[in-house]
Image (cartoon, rainbow, N blue to C red):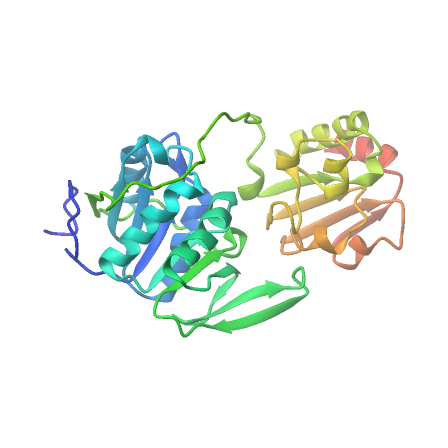
Length: 330
């Protein structure tokens, strides 16, 4: 069957062999930006790529994935049990796919889903995963940050199957264009045995750009003192810059904003074109999540704040006076 003919058919055991498998996340028929970065990383490995899409709405997402240049084939696993990306459901599915076609690489973005799935897949296939890659040196050699990003480790794997997650901010998203790959339906060998089930979710919706992929981010920290000041200073500035809103862990723990906005080692890792840090001192855990931003602007009244060591532009001033003035001038 020509790779340029779009089709959906049943995937049979040992029907073909490809080398790199990329797990694709998506919602509302659109591919997650972090998954597009995972495709970029897989392409740098230099082997043919198969994409795995799962869920009852997977056909729309699979159709989008099929348009990506460089994707050789798309595997679609339907089923309500995959609709919320529960790791306990996805891991056995991924294991079946990996063993069916003898893939040499499995790549996923280091999202909350990827971080949950990767170690479980590793346990099922008895392979040590490599997490949070920021660079592909070769098909078995990679670079990843350690010690909160203060050092980089070059890791070489001798495994026949390499399991890895990639830091999305380190790889540009591959464009959804130029490709026309076939779509094949995959049926797992057995149903996952799990006591976990999806109960509910409470999503925070916003008209602001999504934090993980935004080109501009305005973040607030301890210096904002309370939730009212956070909203009063951060939101108008973000609106003027058409930026996503972020926060330090202290700001989140203090209840200034929702924890989905946390930037740092235990939050989201971002690399926007512009990062504005307001009232953030610059703890090492926070710097690990944003120091790769192209331009860093820091506003803090403490001239000794560590954030100024990595800032491209620093303003030592009272944020309660400086931020409103900045908003007015913008």
